[in-house]
Length: 191
Image 1: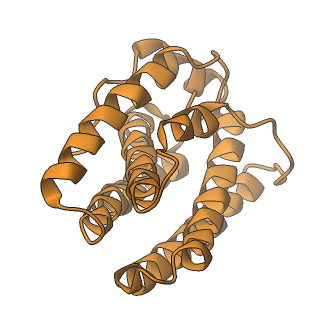
Image 2 (image 1 turned 180 degrees about the vertical axis):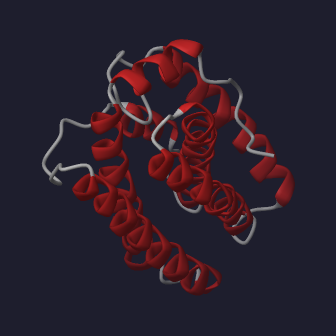
């Protein structure tokens, strides 16, 4: 369902549980970036009118998730602050082909895989966290993350044939698995 080519290694959840506040702060930044990226697609691809309404809704949902996560940070006595991001997204985006419309398809598929990896890791957090409000937060976000993943895949099929999208999704998923395997071992949602 999530089209990932690898599963998260057990050391990730161990690191995440030992650094919950770092993961939570990173998660807030990820939601903010997801909203920003969705909005940037509206500017970059106005000619793909099938993207407009779904991407607008995705951006709204990402901002709502950002607000929820920041609320949890505050509830735990923390503050939303700058944080050195992981290299995950930048490394993943190296899979983008340079020319349009292929680049648009690849961008949507990279975003789909980011959502898929988020969903997988949020499920792990929901299963392992002792903190009930955080466990409930992560459990509540699973359906949205999975839906966002599928939405981006579906949107790619409005630009390219389904067979091409499936082939590219498999190729980018393999690249994403390699990015995850070689990511620095820091407490981040996608490291």
